[in-house]
Structure formats: structure tokens, C-alpha cells
Length: 237
Image 1 (cartoon, rainbow, N blue to C red):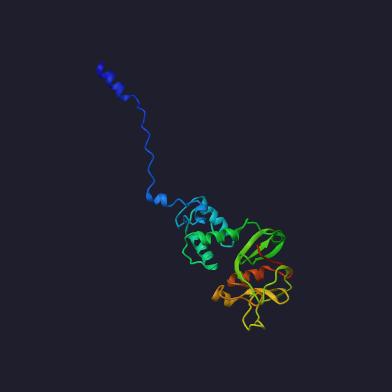
Image 2: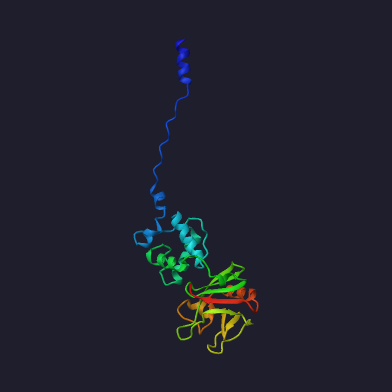
């Protein structure tokens, strides 16, 4: 009888002791991105491999200034590439780390993340002289975004709303003697076109008033997708 009772007690289910909460490893702690406000104040930085809402916000801002990045909240290779491109474009050393200076610049350029109404009406080449980008828009949807540069202080690119009035697949500039492939003329001789000089030298230079496109395939796509009459809107955000 005693043996039977002992066996019964032995078989009774016992309350399990909860497993202890694992202590995060040093590597896991490092991956948590600090608050953006700490980055803006110069107290912290976001490094490749980190993750969290701060990273997602940086990705949203990169997309908003024409540097496509997946909004996953993870500072992955694609995000690092986009961020380095942003750093290089605006004169920062392309380390890939989100530090105070470039982070504040990105925040300022992004603004409220909204495009002007003029960029959402039909087919528009929406050209932002602050962000240094051209967005090819169709009925409010972005079809392409690419880096551009503008005229120097003595030969400024005009702001305003224009229409493409002439298209020339290939020509040589009468003023500079340089190639102007895929030219879309929109205002008194000023055109959107591919620039070999911009491709070679980046922002260490300027045009004579035209909107220079840095990437050849982008200039070709813009040319092929923009019929006579396409709206060209040049502005500062």
C-alpha cells in the first residue's frame, strides 16, 4: 500500500519552474539602434547591422531624398549602400555610419516627405534643386528617381513650370562643345540631358544652365518616356 502511494505521488504532475529570461548578449545589445534624437544631439551613432525604429526612419528619409532603401528597420547592405551614396553626394566621408552631421542633413532634406501638388498632375519631370534629384512622375506615382546637377551661379537653371518643347537624341553643345545625349529642351535652350562630365566628376562642377543627369540609362529612360508636352517642374523643397 505504501509502495502504491509512493508511486502515485511520484506520478503526480509537478508545477514547472519558469525558464529564466535569457540575458541579451553583447552582440544583441549592439544591434539595437539608439534613438534618432541621440544621433541628432551627437551622443550616439547608428552602425551597419543595427535595427529598430530609428533605422526604419532613416530608410524612409533615404527613400524620400531619392536614395532607394528597403524600409525593414534593419541597417542591411542595401541600406548601407544607399546611405553611403547619400553621404558621398553631399560631401560627407562615406563611412556608412549614421552620425550627427549627415543625419541632420538628411532630416532637413527630407522635410515632411511630401511632394508639391505640381509633381502629381499627369506626367511630370519633378526636379528638386535642394535634394539634387529628378523624379519622373506619372499620375502621382514615382517611375524613376536619379541624381542631377544644375547651372552655376552665373548660369542658373531656371525655376518654374515648363513643358518639353523639343527632343534631340544626340547633339553637341554650341556653348561648351560637349555631348548632350538624350536632350529634352524645356526653357530657352535649357534641357534635361545626360552629362559625361557629371558622370566623371560628380558635383565638382556645374552646367551652363541645363539639368545634368548622371546615369546614362536613367537619361535614356527619361528621354524615351517623356513626349513633347511633358511638364517640367523645377523648384526648391
